[in-house]
Length: 451
Image (cartoon, rainbow, N blue to C red; front, side, top):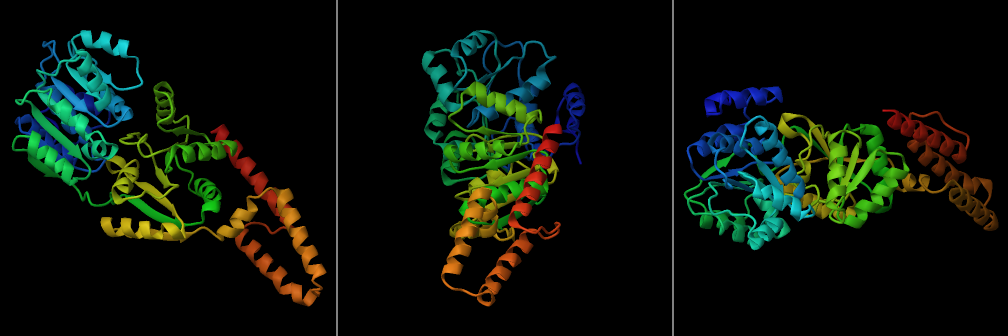
């Protein structure tokens, strides 16, 4: 297997990569770096977590002129989080290279600060489409001498609705530029964009991009909507992820689930578009530093999220298409590590689940978590459960039912409880069982806090 030096990367950069634990190039880096070094346009199709960021960062740093005082490289990304991540990777490799400055340009940040930095000799700009167009309109960024243009997560810029903005940005760069396009999937609109704005691009595809990575274990768990919260809590308690991302369909559902998990003393936080940029950056820093264990997020907010150590992804709400499924699952099992992705689905969700499996040619392991109806009852307030049981007994007495008639019903109830408490010490009443469960949950919560 070739090393970075044989791909044309300087020894000083190779040594720096080793200090970060990066010794061997991944397949996408191995195939892309020499092509970029040769000055050719590149279309690289690879899943998230395959190392594509270094596939364009490393050759750009080898070819950039640190003595020039204009923008030489422009990287366009769909989200602020991804822009910051790429900027951080650039800065780690250039912190001791005089004359090379990198700037992240994105919405939600103070424009005046960006303007001051742009007046300094910035050679590399990493930004989101909206804020880049804002600076172009102000005349505060000049892209007329850009040598390298990177469109990262191109399919997600299409998905979010940024394609027209991307075209406008491309028109501000010279035709002599070298263009690199990276995408996990290749919709027709992206192919059209590439054909129109790239010069004889070399197409590179690595691994099987039609499905999730093989090192991610896929599980689908059947539940009902009213039992979702209890099911998720049970799964987190069982699997005890080091770091996990929990995906919800909407911002409102993210906030609602966050409040529930917080009330159960989980180390968690939320990430969605309604948060201020300062809050989003704070949440991401806490997640990267391991101060929070669970990140509850929407698809767009977590797009391109690259955090080392994410062991689990939970699809609290099933993704609506195969493409979204791939991007969610790509948060774990990155760079060859093992991961687990658990999708909760109801009977109404089954057609969507079947569609995802068919399109991606996968077969998720199907599971049921106990009796979801009983799980839901056990999460009611004790007083409500007691009242409900008392009313039921009273109704039976009024109906004139004798002990022989009622005995099978009681036996059925006891059978249901025995399934729920399998492996635990049996109790003499529902209240006792609830006290045991409450004690156990409190103990686990204290354990989490102590960790």
